[in-house]
Length: 500
Image (cartoon, rainbow, N blue to C red; front, side, top):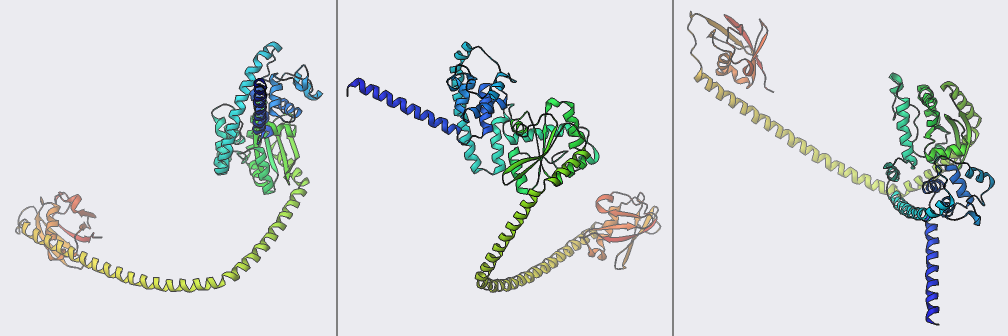
C-alpha cells in the first residue's frame, strides 16, 4: 500500500474509534437513568421548564436523551425534517407549538450560531452528571440507606432546585409545618411527631407506594400547589392539620405529600391527571401495580373527606384483603418450616446443651465458693476498718479532752456577779455542770464539754437548749456570748451526737 492509502486508512480507523467511543459514552450516560432523571436533564439543558413536553419529546425519540437534547436545542432536525417539530406526533407537535413557562423562541440563524455552544455545554453537563451518578451509586451501595439518601440530596441543597425526592419531601414538611402550625395551639400541637398534620413520609412517591405495599395499606396522597394561594393554606390548616383527621389517616393509611412545583410531585400529578388543587387521592399498590382508588379536588371538610376515604377504602378493600391472606399463608408456611428446622437443630444440639449445662453448673459452684470467700474477706475487712476508725476517734477525743482541760478558763467562784450556771445532759443520763460568766462564749461551753470524761462518746456534736429551742454548733455559734444566746442565768443543754 502507498503512504497516502495508509494515511487514509489510519484516519478511517481513528474516526471509527471516535464513533464507537461516542456511542458507548451515550449508552453509559443513559444506563441507570430513570425517566424522571432524563426529563429533568433535558429540561435543564434546553431551558424548557415544561416537564410534560420534555417527557413527550423523549418518548418520541425512543427515550434517547442525546437525540432529544439535540432536537430540543435545534442542533439536529427531528427525523431529517426541516423543522424542529417534524416527525413528532400531532398531539406532541401541538404541545411543542404552545409556548410553555420558561421557553424562549429565537430565530433560526441565532439558533444555528448558538447550537455548538449549547451542544458543548450539554456534553459537559452529561459528563459531569455521569460522574456524579457513578460516585453516588457507589456510595449508595456502601452507606446505610438513610445516609445514602441524604448524600444523594447534597448536589441539590446548594442550589434552589430540589430534584431529590427526599429533599423535596423534607422541604414540603417544613413548609407544611409553617402553614398548618400557625394557628395550632393546645391539644392540636400536643401530639408526638415532626409537626402538625398527618405523618407524611420523607421520601419520594414511588418509595411511599412501595412502603404502602409492604404494609398492605392504602397510600393517602396530598398534592399541594402554591398557585392555589390561600385556598391551599386553608385546606392544610382546617382539614389536614385537624387532629381528628390526622389521627384517622395516620391509623389507617400510609401518608405522602408533595408540592407540584417539585419534580417528584409533578410527575405523580401528571400520572393521576390532577387538574385543580388542593388535591387528595387514595392509591393502592398490590404486586407492584399501582391504581387510583379515589381522588378529590378542591376544598372540603375534614369530616366529609374522612367519609369519602372510608367509602373508597371499603369498596376497594378486596385486593388488600387477598394480599393479607396470601401473606398470612406465606408467613404460616414459613413458620412451619422454621419450626421444623428448629426441632431438627434442637435434636442435634441436645448433647451439646447437656455438656454445656454440666460445665455451667461446675462454673457456678466454683463462682459461689469464690463469692462466699470474697464476702467473708470483705466483712472481716469492714469490721477491722470500723474498729480502727473507732479507735482513732477515741484517740482524737482523748487528746482533745486533755488539751481543753489544760486551756480552760478558771471557774468563777460562787457569788460572783454576772455568772451563768450551765448544765449539760448526755444521752446516757450523765450530767455535768459549771459556772461561767455571762460574757463567756459558747466556745467556752464546748471547751468545757470537751474536757469532761463524758465527751468521749463522739468527735462532732451539738448542744441543744429546750427553752427556747435552739441548736448551738461549734462552727456557727462559737463566738456567741452566753447572754446573747439566752443561756443566762442558768440553762440545761442536751448533748446531740453528730458523728456519721
